[in-house]
Image (tube, rainbow, N blue to C red; front, top):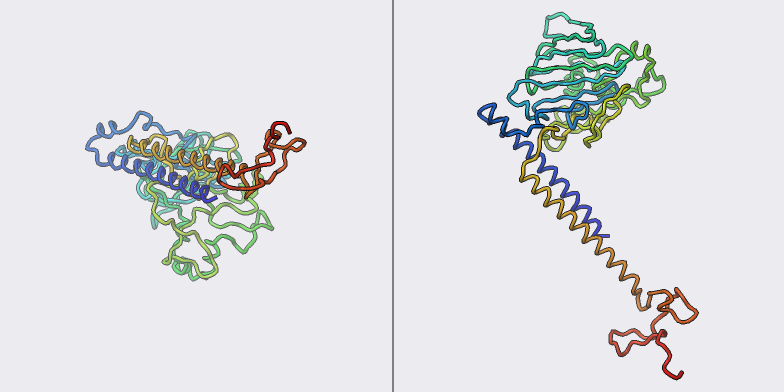
Length: 396
């Protein structure tokens, strides 16, 4: 049993080491691309397939909620974008799906509606009027850098949008999650003295007021993006919120400086900052195959973006060699454990205390098969051994 425990621990350690090596290789690749003096130097560092990103079967950059999902390609998960000053996000919105209010702190967005209409609105800065657009298929809308904006599918059919950015690392800040992630006392004061407990209840997991759509269920607050949209659209399309509410995994992690009051819980920050972006469908890195009728149900752990490296980036030769060595060592441990367990079973079939356990007609007296027969004596000296299986002497 101890051997099995050690084997499992060793295998987990090897897997962690391999993952760390891959992350280190990706970080080294990005570092080399950023310090390259010319575009030609950057091109020489990348394989041909690094210049292609598959939005339909992504390894990373996926954000999923109850209303659909988005797939983002940026310098974080597509190193070929480094130095090219652009990025792109594809949105797959289900019926009534909403890309909730957010900003891009480092880029202007140009959003193109592919196969359906979207509503798009933004607020640029203090004092500006609110801008709202109905964007029909084949049209595009611009959202200025830093503006609070949203995209919303107000129909009962799936639709797709394509958002282009003028920065390889546009960034994104979800308004609701980040605002309510501030210290509760600050949020309460900003809202005119609303009670801290009410603020904590909104940001915490469960609201005490039943949902209006599902009368007897309880709503999860601040839903993950892409969220389900307005109540009139949901009613018109016959969509009900999930009984347990929408997922809320994208909330702001809590530390001592923005901790919720006693009795309320919030997400805790990771032990260390990730070297790449964080969310995969199923963390564990499940590819998303977009099909008609998709409603954003292929969610992975976490609710943040995937930590997988992009389909275009590849580990260097040293990392591959180290991964091979680790894999061979793991296989060796498995073989050793298998041989050890086999030897233990063989030993148990031969002896059990001072009794001879080997059974079968070959070893049994006449008329007896399968019974365990004791030795008449048990000694390590060959001349002292005697057994009831000795053949009768000649002439007997």
